[in-house]
Structure formats: C-alpha cells, structure tokens
Amino acid sequence: MKIAVIGAGVVGSLIARELCKYDAEVLLIEKNMDVGWGVTKANSAILHAGYDDPVGSVRSKFCSLGNAMYTELAKELDFEIKRTGSYVLAFNDEEISVLHKLLKQGEVNKVPGLELHDRDEILSREPRINPKVKMGLWAPTAGITEPWMIAIAAVENALENGLKLFLNEEVIGFEKSNGKIKKIITNKQEHSVDIVINVAGLFADEISKLAGAEYVPLHPRKGQYILLDKKLGKIINSVIFPTPTEKSKGILVLPTIDGGLLLGPTAEDLPSDRKHDLTTTGEGLQQIKDFVLKLVPDIDFSLVVKTFAGLRPESPQKDFFISASRTVQNFINVMAMRSPGLTAAPAIAKYVVEDLIQDQLKLTLKRKRNFKSKREAIKKYAQLSLEEWQEVVARKPSAGRMICFCNEVTEAEIVEAISRGARTLDGVKFRTRAMFGRCQGGFCMSKILKILERELGTDASNITLKSPGSWIVDGKVRE
Image (cartoon, rainbow, N blue to C red; front, top):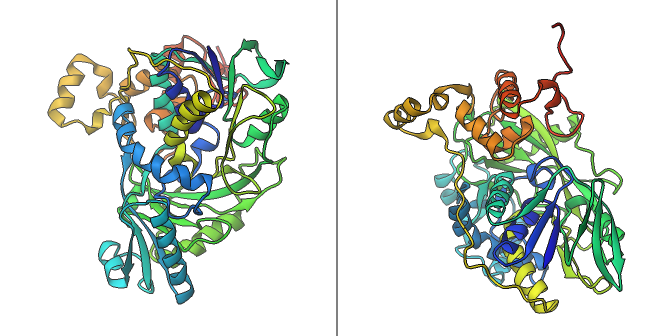
C-alpha cells in the first residue's frame, strides 16, 4: 500500500512517522525546501494544557491527550520540551469569572493539576508579574518546545524507517478514477497512491479543492512577535497568558527553550489571498509592547533581537477539520490546524492512522517488527563538561571550532546538520540554532555559507537562505 502525506509541518511529519510503523510505502511531499517551514516555524511554541478548548470540540478531544504524549515522544526523538507550567492572569472581577469558567472547562477536558491561585501565590512564583494581579489559573502540564525541531526529528526518524521524502515539490493536481485518487501530480513528477492525507497547513483547503473533496475555507490569522535577547535573564519562569477573548488566547509573555523571551502574538485576520503575508508593522509591534507591560511591567525593550510574524490557518468553525472524505474514497483531510495544533499533533497522528485509515476506511495495516523508535539529536558540544569536550576535540578538531558564538555552535554541529539534510542557511539554522542568537547571523552567516559550499561541493552562489531565489551571493566580484 502506498500512502502519501501532503505537507511536512509538525502534524504531517508526525503522521508520516506514525505510518512508518506499518508495512506501507510512505511518501511525504513538501513544497518548501525543508520540513517545518510553514505554520510550524513561526508560532508561540507552546504545549497547551487544554483548558481553553470548548467542551465537545475536536480541539478538546486531542489537546490534553497530545500534551501527555509529548513526554515519551521527546525521549524517543530526542528534542527538548520544558514543562514550565502556565498562568492565565485576571486583573478584575470580570476576568476572574472567566478563570472559573476555564477551570471547569479544563476539568471536563480532563486537564490534570489545574488550580486557582491568589495574588500572593502568583507573586511568590512569578515576582516580576504586575502586582495588580488578582487571580491566576495555574496549569502545570503546559510547556514550551521548538516546533520545527519536532518536525525535523520526526522526519529523520521516519527516513530511517523507510520514508520517501520529496522536498521543493508542489502538488498541482490529481488523477482520479471511480471516485478515488490514483495519482498525485506535482510540479516535478507524478506519484501513484492508494491513500492521500492532506496536511497542507494554510493551503489545505486549496489542495482539497484540487482533489474534489470536502473542505472548510481557510484564511490566515497573522501573529506578530518580538524576541528578546537571553541576556535579559530569567524574568519569568512560566508561560504568562492574559484572560482570553473570543478571538484569541491573547498576547503572551513566555520563555523560549534556549533562554530568550518571546512576546506576542497579535491576532490579525487577513483575507484568504494573503497567505504569504509575513510582514510586521509598527502598529502591531507597539500593540505587543503596550499589552505585555500590563502583564510584566519591567521588560527592557532595548534588548530586542528580532521581530517576525507567523500565519496560522483559521476557519469559520474555529476548530480542527479532521475527516475521511465522503466524496473521494481514499482522501483524508487534516486541516484548520489552528492553536493548539502543535500540542494535539501526536494524538492526531495516532487517530489518523488507527481510527480513520484502519477503522473508518477499513484498510488493514500490518505493524512492522523492526520499527526503530529512537532518534538522536545533533550533539551540542558546548553543553559538555570542559574535560569531556577536550576529549572529543582531540578526536574531532571541528568540535572545538566555534562558528556561532551567540548560541555556541561548532563547525562539527553544522557539518552534522548538512549530513542530515540541510541544504540552505535556514536548514542549518533550524537544526543547530546557529544564526538564531543576538547577531542573527551577522558574524557567523558567512562562515556557515563557506561550510555549506565545501560540504555540498558547490559554489556559494548556488546556496540560498531558504527558498529558490533567496541567494546570499551572486557570483564573484573578481577572479
């Protein structure tokens, strides 16, 4: 049986890995030049607890379940998660009433450990919070991670288990017969298939239209962010939410995995024809600044490292749309993956493979006996003790040559990233955190470019930042 997954974001990558546990030929088709570069790479990176999802929604079915699955998944695939916990803060009686509703909703959704804390308890845990706070909803299972790294780790593991990965390849049509898709047509080739799983993020509705299947209309909801330098120190320990509104969970203050501070996002609904609009605006960034100072008053904005925007798919029903098509017999939609799509992803992957494919479509998948569940991350040499590091450098000198000083990334780590599939500067960046630090590549990009040139055996003018055409150098000034 040949099963194709369209879209290599965190949800699609985990579905592909789940499928690789069975005796099937699994294809993962992604239009970008690397995995995890769509919705996955620019969001708040939060593992949500699950109290915010309306009772009975599809989101509530998968959020807390997916959250719990991340502990074991992180061990298997060797990526980082931190169970920081989260607070939803209330500053007046109206907001306090919302917290009580969220507590009850979370209990129905089987979210463990939820508690209401008074002002003194909150400030004992988070002394930098605005002292005007009156109450907070504490969720100990909430946490943070790096979504793109989950996608990378899942795909690396799936490749070891037989996955066929097709990058920089866009689906442009389907060949159908007797109500079934027989071939996927891309801008490069055709793929014969038995099952198609549509996990194309912001563009999943357009893929579904091409297939002639049901869909929900998607429009982008833009979220602008501000990232602050880890030099700022540990201002807060947990994820800090305001009281949510009908539209969004609000503008947040949260730590990042590597010790920075992330502020945002805004929530700006854009028309469906602006699915590539990643611009930031002065108005949006000022909105973030004004809002977060009400939560944490003493944030130092002189330490801003970068600003950026991400897009998340929103739909009229404000819920996931996960379903086997009624009109196309071998087509499955996994779309409208708005928040908490990242958190729900492992549970969704299991549901698609076990419930939709095997139970609903009545297709038998036989489990592999030799599935390899473990994947090792690229070793971070600067995290070793000095003695251990010296021993490694004696055997491998490149492990002692520092390339990115902001995030302490060595040449050996960059070479390893290239050996695992990085073909662009961003491919190296998302695998190693090089160029993610204070200088944003100002001091290390040229060095990384030369390493890519050497390892790939190509000219620097052929290497791009991310997408085709995003070149860094265009030939030599002189011979």
